Amino acid sequence: MPRRFSPFVLMAYLVIVSAALTASDKDFVGKWSGDYEGGGGAGKYVLTLAHDDAKKLAGSLEVLPDGNSAYTVPFKSVEPKGSTALLKYDSPEGNSEVHVEITIDGKALKGTWKALEPGSNAVIAEGTLTGAKN
Image (cartoon, rainbow, N blue to C red; front, side, top):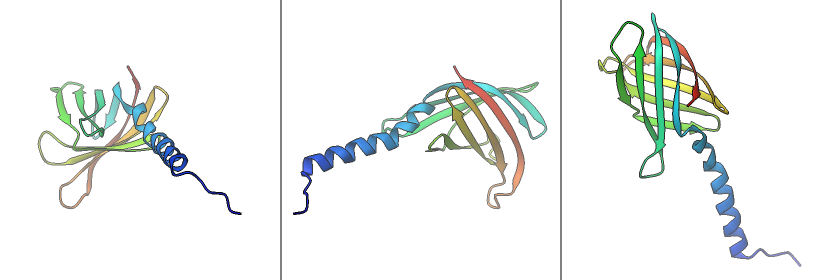
């Protein structure tokens, strides 16, 4: 005779699996800071990520370019996938959309960034970043 599972056991299993799948984005929450370079410049950054009211990751990036004025931009989207995340924001000048792809390993962060021309998505500048969780 085939073995039957209680609906409660199945529901508990689904809750546990669902929690395990969404737990990885918790590793991104917090303040991260470090250095970036590329596109003819370099500087420091502070990246802040938190859960918004809908429990999605959201945040902002403070950019501190060497020799230029600092600026802060909100992320348009934050898309975590395992130990990586794709962060998107519009440049303060409005002339590009910037994609930042980060990988975290414990408290270490490394990644790449690309400024894309609106409409064509042609890469107009790109570089790297490294950092750590504060």
